Image (tube, rainbow, N blue to C red):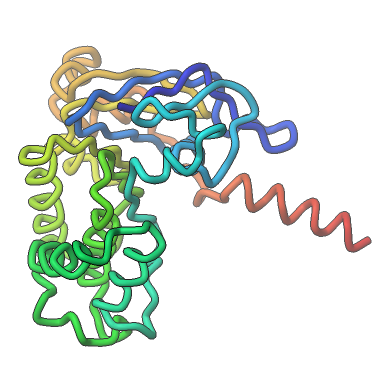
Length: 262
């Protein structure tokens, strides 16, 4: 369902992703874990057509992400790190707009919106402006919106960042249900190692742009002789505190913008 073949992404002389290869099969819940700046978000941006790789190939549902962007985009939904819903619109209007953008048939759209807003327990708030929603409600709306066009893959880039424990558990309940009932492939990143341990069927550690280990949570624990996934992760990536990640793409753009203004 997802295939990354020897992919590298460079920004100037910096390789944010360095010769990465991985495969994710249909119905898997795959976690890509790593420290700040390790290459997680850059990988997701390439998979979701927001960035082009410097070299290598990415396939989603057998569609080349670079050469068949429209087909690739129809294959996935995504929940970004930062909220991306329009807060000046209602929940229902956000769903309608997404349906138009993804050409969901009009005769199906109304029922599909109702089905998904009920799934994430927002149907009774459908006519409320999103700016009145809590962070958890916005996340639930983003999941509903990302599922509107029947994607085969759902990307979740740190979807529970800043959410309380109750909302985090609720979101992962939805994800488990989607994977189990619809055989949906889930590709996610998180800094909460217990989330990956509980919800991922397979995990890969990435650091300095390279995949350094992969397997089930139990396999990674066994390999590092660790009692927890967090211990295994720290043994492989080190205990040194990393600086808050700076998006290498944005840093590269800023440098070029500054040069152009001189």
